[in-house]
Length: 436
Length: 179
Image 1 (cartoon, rainbow over the protein chains, first blue to last red):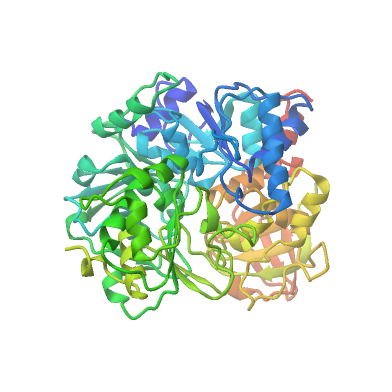
Image 2: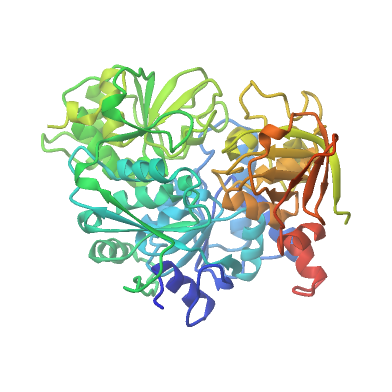
C-alpha cells in the first residue's frame, strides 16, 4: 500500500518505514514556531515542568516571531514581548525577530518562509492554528497548544496521530478574477467547518501548476477553517525556486510526493476554471455565497491584511483592480511583513505607479506597520479593530462573532480582488465589475 | 479520581469557536502565572452572543455551571490553550459535545483542565441551562434529575491522562518521564 505525502513526512520524522492513519507515533520536530501571545505560556510550561533553568532542546530549531500585539499601548502586551526578548537572550536563540529592532519581521506565517525556515519534508509545529500555512511548501505543519509546545521545547519530540488524508483535485486554469482565497472558501463552504477534522487536506491538480507560493500559502493557511490538521501541496519547481532563493541557513531537506496507490479517506474535484468569486458571510467561514449574488449587501469598511491576505501578491492584485478608482469606504491595508511593506513601496504596476501610490490615489488609509493587527481583534487600540457595529469585508481568515473586536460587528471573508472591488462600491461586489 | 461529576449545565450550540470561549483581547494573560490563570477563568465564554446567560457572573471568578453541553465542533478556530484553561479555571469539569475541534480536544488532554466527552447524537435540545445532572465517566452516561439517561462516548486512553492532571503528570505517574 502506498503512502500520502503527509504519511511519508511523518514516517520519516518518526524513523519508520511506513505509517498508516490512526497510528500514534513520536516525531522529531524540525521547527517549533511561537510568538508573543503563546510564547510566554509555552516557556512557562517548559520551566514549570523541566526546571527554572530549562532551555530549548535545540536553539537552532526554535523560531520566535512576535507579531500579534505589537503596535499597542497595552502594558501586558509589552510585558509579554519583553519576556520573550529576555528568554531569547538567555537561550541564545539565533532566530528571534525582536519587535522594535531592524530584525522585526511581522506576521509569523509569512515571515517564517521568507526568512528561510520552511523547506519541503520538514515537520513544523507552531503555537498558532494557522501554522498549517507551511504545508504549501510540501512540509507537515500544524498548530499546537502551549502545553504540547512546552513539552516539545524541552524534548524536541511530540506524539502525533497520523491523520487520514482528504484529496482535493483543483482542475483548470484560474480565471483572472479568481484567487486562491476563492478556492479555499469554496472548499470550506462545500465540506463545512468541521469537514476535515483530524484530517490532512492534500491539494493537487492542474490549477496549482502555475500558482505562485503566496497563493498556495492562502490555500493551506485556511485548512484549519475546515478543521484540518494540516494542509499540504506537493513541492514542485515553483516551490524549489522560492525555497532555494530563501535558504540562507543552508538547511538540508527531502521532497516527498504521494504514491499513485496512496489511500485517501475521500476525494473531491473542483472546476476552478469556472469558479465564481466566493465570500463567506457572517459568522462562519463555511457560510458560502457568491459575490455576484450579494450585491445588495452593504459593507462599511474593507481590510486587506493578515497571514491569509496580506502578502505582496494580495496587494498587487488589489492595487491593479483599484487603480484609477476611488474607494467609498474606509479601506485598511496591513502588510503582513516588513518585506511586503517594502515591496509595496517599490513594486510598480504597468502604469509605472507603485502600489503605495495607487492605494493613496484611491483614497485608502495609509498602510499600517506589519502585524496581525485587527484580524483577531486584539487590544482595544489595535489598528483597524472593529469597535462598533461595522460590517467589514476582509481578506483575513475568520468571521466568527466578535473576531475583529466587536460582538456587534460583522466580518465577510473574501479574496483581495473582491475586497478591493467592494471597497470601490460600498457593497459586496464581484471583481468582474472592474477586472476586464 | 471519582468518575462522577455532578452539577448544573450550561447549554450552547454548534461551532462554539475559541474567540467566543476567550476573545483575543484577554490573551495577554499568561496561563502559567497563577493569578492570571484565575483571571482567565472569570472571562470564560465571555465572547458568546449577548442572547446567552453569562457563564461567569459579572464580578465573580468562578462559574456556577460545572458542565457545558454543546453541539458539534466545539472549540473550533485558534490553538489558544487559553480556551480550555479559561473554562477549567472557571470551574468547568466537563464539556459534553457531539464533536470537538482537534486542537481544543488535544489541549484539554494536554492540560488536564477538563474532560472533553463526545455524545453519539446531539443532545443540546434535551437540556436546559441551569438544570442539575450527573455524569458517570465509568458507565459513560449523563442523567437528568427526572431520571432520563443519555449515552456518552467512551474516552478511551484519553481519560487516564486527564484523571492524572494532564500529559506531564500522567507521564510522571506512568514512568514515562522522571518525577
